[in-house]
Image (tube, rainbow, N blue to C red; front, side):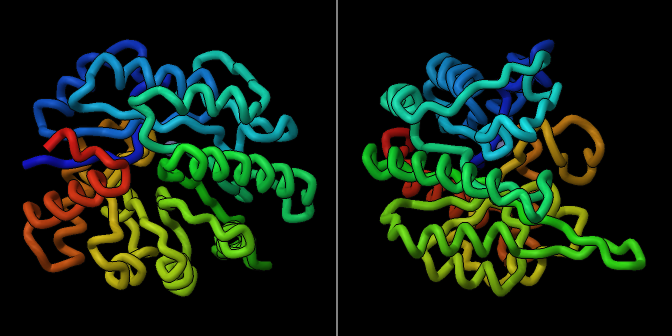
Amino acid sequence: MKLFDSHTHVQFSAYDNDREEVIKRAREAGVKMICVGTQFSTSEAGIKLAEKYPDDIWASVGFHPNHAVSEGWHHDPDEQSEARPEKFDSDQLEKLALNPKVVAIGECGLDYYRIRNDELGIKNKQKEVFLAQAEIAQKLNKALMIHCRSSVLKSPEGKSIKTDDAYEDLFNLMTNNQLPITKVIHFFAGSLEIAKKLLNAGCYFTFGGVITFTRDYDEAIKYLPLDRILLETDAPYVAPEPYRGKRNEPAYVVEVAKKMAEFKGVSLEKVAEATTQNNLTIFRLSDIV
Ligand SMILES: [Zn+2]
């Protein structure tokens, strides 16, 4: 059985001590992967891995919205052991994207989770950096790997209330700019309503470990057709059951596939086959089958 981890970060510092072992376990499990960059350094590191494992790894190069602005730049030690803030440069990214192992641009998009709702300057900058990457994807005819995370409001009783604010802005950006590119919404975490709108706008959706332990996305997963769904780990983050709380890794994508098979009422093999085919189509990997 062949499986695809469509969004993973094995180039991150979380794997500095055992990266080769982690990749070996994935290959033994029949898992191929797209190694996704979050700024230049992590994008370049992803390309290096893709070159080293040409039959199993491909790269996506991009600038994450948390890195797209110098205000609120977010350092995560699992991503890079030391903080290395970089400035977005469209020409530099385009040069990286010319590498034949690069099959997508991103992750790029909007992240309102870490900012205040009135920080319009940051939101506008994120939009500008996202659109610059969408242009590169269009110019080079590659898919766009989108990260989108909405803000969470607190009720007076202290309860968390989910919103679709970043997804709504993303939808408007797509519609207003008529982006005729293949769009993949990674780690979809919006409502059923926004899922319907994005599906009609031609988007694909990736789901990861979170679907094995929360029920928040059940409706959207059941609604979306299997030919628009991809599986991911987003490793090292959000490991699926039964590994919840541990460091995630690409081999665990099989747990996500099992859960997807349950949702769709089909066999694990059927999910593996359909999602692998989606990867071949979206990232144009026809040379590997
Ligand atoms: Zn990611």
